[in-house]
Length: 224
Length: 224
DNA sequence: ACCTGAACACCGTTCAAGT
DNA sequence: ACCTGAACACCGTTCAAGT
Image (tube, rainbow over all chains, first blue to last red; front, side, top):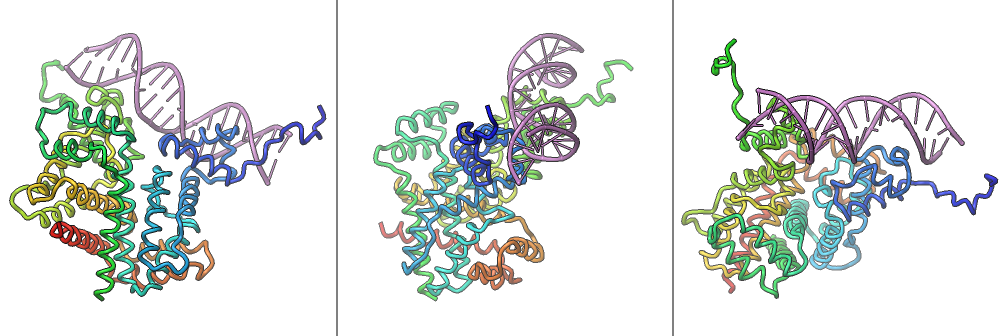
């Protein structure tokens, strides 16, 4: 067939950095960072492994780009919303984004080459607090405790991998199985009498701590 | 020479699970989890890679064992110390342990097979709060917000890798260099007018947030 | 009981070509 | 300009031996 038949021969679209980064995020969302290999991303895009290196310097550069996409998904505290409500909305948005992209939790704040969405996000959060009257020292306090809590909650609570009460129950059995009964009475009581109870929900735990911190920050702010 | 000369021939001591785990922790402390390979640990112990598998099921089992050693290094809240001081001491101890073993931060609360030191630690913390009069719901609130904050601070603040003010300065230059000047005015002001100032110290930020949370928990506890 | 060596199916990345 | 294929120096882990 003639090589000019450009439409019927399905000439694949050029790769492009965006398509590479999106495919990588998709893979990491499903399988985690460990299973994200250059070769698998290339396979998803039906391309030779080395084709990726035209659009990405190396694996670390790819991860930098992925993280900036994640930052771009966090709702910015813009508009005239009061600082406390704005920080609350931003915290819930960040919590949701980290739940979608669990592989990103440990990488968001340790990149040596932050992207534009990263810097823009921090600029907006700091700007909102400054506009509300926080001095730079109080901004540091507030940002440190809020982000510490949000990322830490994402890390410690959301990483527990079960959805149903039955799963959590089975897992608890497995955990205590190798040890003598009543070796850990307080932990056992806590798990059986509270965590395993049908009404218990992690999501509410996040908002309890978040509001505890926001209220305490408000008090500290007004005390100045 | 006769094979009975057992002392002069330096017959290496048997490997043993403890020696393997300790060597692995030592390597991870220095180079992180990424560079921790079975082959390198074997090399440190001057042994063939496959020798490790007599004492450890696989790489994941090795990491489980490493994490439990880390848990064993956290000071337990024992004795008759009041709950607030005990939680404060425990938080500072956990912060220090995580600073020594940064590779462990993301793994401490997501192990499918927690070891005895892990369970014993949680049992002691829960026991201290229960003994102080916290009901199980309040224990969940307190533990969730405290550990969230401690792990998150370790993740977000301690992962920034600089020691001296000069280093942080150079890094800030690098970060903003690819972008137009004054693109991020609030962030720039915050970094130059506060973070880069000689008196600023991360360590104090940790204790500010910790005391904010502990005081808020105390209020919530007494309000019940 | 404890350790070894070869082998297998993977990695990221460099280099030299291909179109 | 964009993609490929072979090659190199690595991985974790299985298997069959060695002492």
